[in-house]
Amino acid sequence: MSMTLRAWLVVLVCAVVIRLLTLAAYLLSDIIKARYAEIVRVKAIANNWITSHIQRGVTFWLPVVYFKLFGFNEFAARLPVLYRHVDAYGVHAYDG
Image 1 (cartoon, one colour):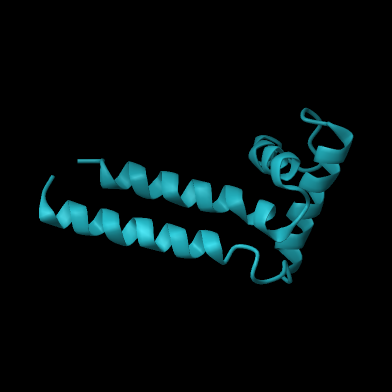
Image 2: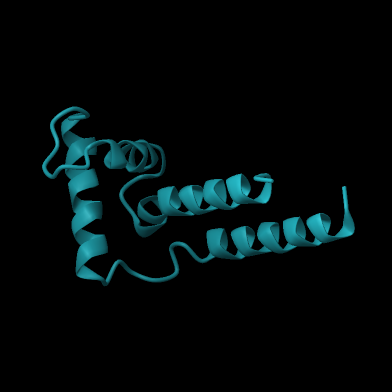
């Protein structure tokens, strides 16, 4: 593993850890974030995985899983976004 790749991986891991530790530090004050979190909360309570209240139903499946695992809070609402960012960075890091 080259030194440059190793340095980027260290930076990425540090950024993910810092972000993970601060996920629940601030509230869902943005109207759009709160709306999506509420849609996911309703889906989790109703166990409704199929019917979509808006057109992107698949987008809400991962947050529903996190709400069921971690409860209805800001941390669980933001965790899927962190997962998608890490996944995207990982794809780009290994994309030649």
